[in-house]
Amino acid sequence: MHPSRVRSHSIVTASVIVFAVIAGCASAPVGAPVDAPRLVVGDHWQYRVTDNLRRGTVSQLDAEVIAVAGGSARIRLDYSDTSGRTEWIDEVDGQGGLSSGALWRERPRPFNPPAQLLAFPLDQGKTWRQVIDTLHPDTELRDQILIYGKIDGRNATTVPAGRYDAVYIYRIVQLDDEEFWRTRTTLREAVWYAPEVKAPVREARAAEYTEKGSGPDMTTISTESTVLELVSFRPGGK
Image (cartoon, rainbow, N blue to C red; front, side, top):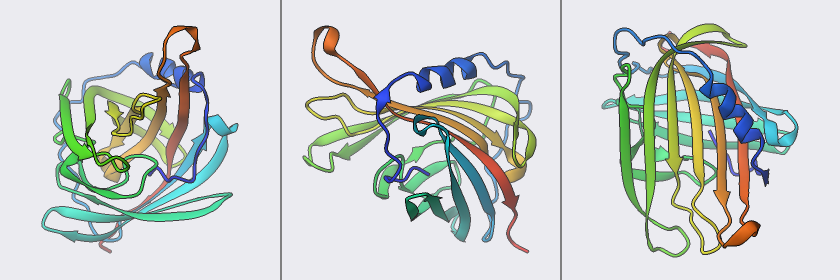
């Protein structure tokens, strides 16, 4: 859900605001563990994406399950904004892992093991950490993607599609894109997952890196501050 076309750079202010608000949200216990969804061909989600680094520019993301086999699903994603459209395919396994697709603003690629963006069943207080060994796409040197996730109860949220008592997940992803002049990109994501729509109904995402150096000239650069909200869900299999 993160096409390369959307690019903005500024000092990290919007990201701090977004996650200061999120940190203040009170959560209730999850209750019974939430199992992985049963995706079927035709499941379709439409999202509104608000870009806070581009003065609230609004774009649209459509996602639809196009194939299901052996516990895995292929999901076609179609992102459109004023610059045009971008389409790609994510493949997800039955436990919330991304086995092929785009983690952020990159070309889709395989992940072995799958990138554990969610960790079903979703249970109160559950945490997970993952290290994925990779090769840097430019230098072909060994690198790593680091993922941390935590389930922090239920948190009610209202989006254009309605009001949901969603499972709240906090996630940090560190990408394998470090350069000699800057650190790797760090993504901080707040996710509200609603079992009744088999997917998140809201995601707040902030991304940043820090320029390397010493002294007062070191600068942290914000590269994303977006909010994704569910507009509609249409179940498939009908």
